[in-house]
Image (cartoon, rainbow, N blue to C red):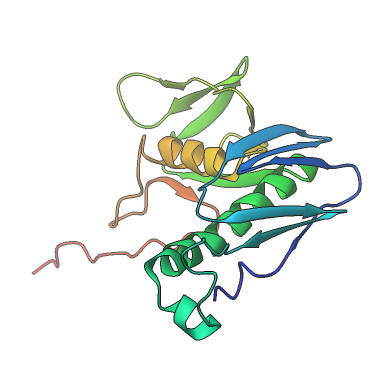
Length: 194
């Protein structure tokens, strides 16, 4: 049995959740998210708790618990239980508090500015790099070497941050490029002088 999946998800005050079969819709002060999950697991909404359960099929209802745990349907549902529970918890956290990823620019002349909602990046190329702001994402540039990506979907925030980092990944000799805040870049020695 999944250790994370069996714990119910608490719905905080100010957030409303609707569960219809395997479809979950969550509304909160930051916005609204919805998602359809695997039909292998059963979602139970009681009061301010959502529980993800591994259901028994008509073929497995007569089996003992140990025999049921050996069936293919249990193993497939058990694999989805923890994932589904975590995704629901992330949706609830996203609409109530939101998610943030911070990026740093390292290198001479590397800087970021906001152009409307979009990011204008100078990354040592012969041209500026413009990154268009996707829907449900906001950028903050506290100073010209830091970027903050905000949003309600953890997956989307992580994807956008990874796309920005991919515009100039950090190189291992001088560490120049875009990296996550607190990321350790493994350094290499340059050529040794004779």
